[in-house]
Length: 326
Image (cartoon, rainbow, N blue to C red; front, top):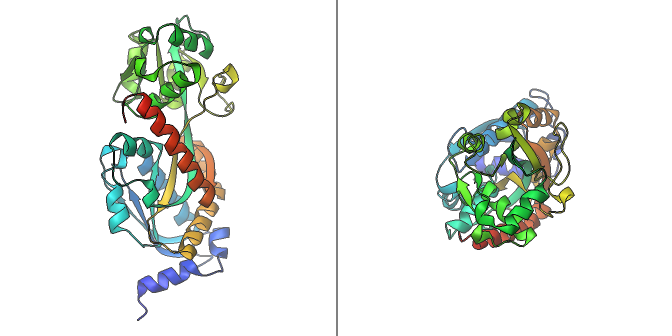
């Protein structure tokens, strides 16, 4: 018996993917997917949720989908929601989960029995690099100065950042490893967000801070904080700061976000979803949204994304172990 699901999957698996590849405006082509379901293992309003809703807006605007349904399940960096996506959404060829680097760390730190190998990787989409900053009057003029101080005595260089085991903490651990400092000796001070970390910097309660560039940008422009380095792989337009790599510290890190299909989808469904997300990433509406939100597009698809995940998971697991969090 042919039901609505069979019709939907037949559409996804059809070899003619022109609707996905061109993403014609709504009304000019039949939507490739009647209803796209997006699972967000986090509360509304955060980065993963913003990514999901931006995906929805662009796919609706380009006519690639007839409708989008977003489900939020928050908790433990995505570890609460992940088993639900894997077990209850299995085999759904019209479903995606939005997640990213934070989930990789949370899986390791929480020793989750379900990890991203249980999903079907579709695409990495965006990344937000981090900034290493100091108070304006700090004696550290370069990232090398900061690294030298860490090597001399890491306990005397308190660094403010977000939650323990998060991207800020991971970057500090990677820097420490690169310059030969034991991560377990680091003086990391975890705060609930960039605001409290900035306040600690301005109050000279810490020697340095790590967070997304956007968290510090206003204070940097005001001359109250200075950027020593950014964690991108190359200099970024509009930001007068060198990378860590330029200063002899071979570390780059993006707080990346991507999408995953559930387990149990077939090859045709996977290929169709990859083509749809490739077209999304190439759409001018997506480029504009990334610019507005200060997201750096770092697209990677299919098998290449899967290989990246394997390498990234091993790297993060190693650092979290060094930090005593795994």
